[in-house]
Amino acid sequence: MAKNTQPIAKRCKALGLSPAVLGYGKKTTERGSKDQQRKKKSEYAMQLNEKQKVKFVYGMLEKQFRSYYERAERMPGKAGENLLVLCERRLDNVVFRAGFAMTRHQARQLVNHAHFTVNGKKCNIPSYQVKAGDVIAVRDSSRSSEVFKRFLGEDAVTVAAAPQWIEREKNELKATVTKLPVREDIDFPVEEHLIVELYSK
Image (tube, rainbow, N blue to C red; front, side, top):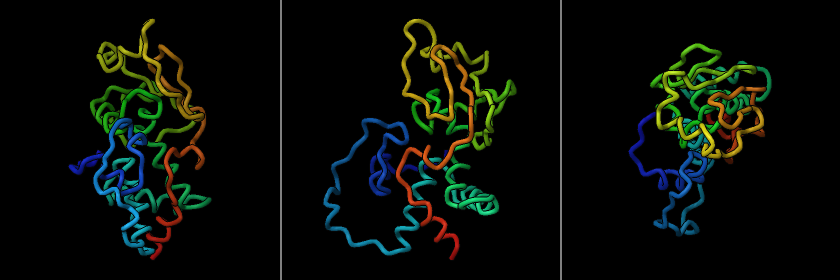
């Protein structure tokens, strides 16, 4: 994930996000709580904020995010919704949403270190676009790792329910993409039409 040294809670507050979206359930900040004193944002500032929000959640830099937008624009349907779905289909995001990682940042690291397979083949590309029917599994050589052992056995931890488009069973170190995600599956507030307006200028 793109390196950002700014504190997570501070960054989330600036973007109007809950840290829980990134997997940080207890992070909070009390500083700068006088939001009512802030000046009204300009149209450009609101558009930029929405773009920065999506980039931050999925851990992308501008060049990659722009290429996602250009691809989304060429697809049938609404460009904004297509953009969010492309981001949601990233392998590192699927690993996080399936519950194999505590945060999206950790999910990206695990994928980079080749701990996962897609349809039986090793894949260490976080941006890999999953398709309906894809099976994402922890590699046999990685199953003894403490990161994954906690998902096995009688004392297996219970992870939060995966979204409807991902199927995962308890004590199974694999998840199946049953269908492609849709706009309603995005788990954080975003006004994607503002991103389209920003790039359309």
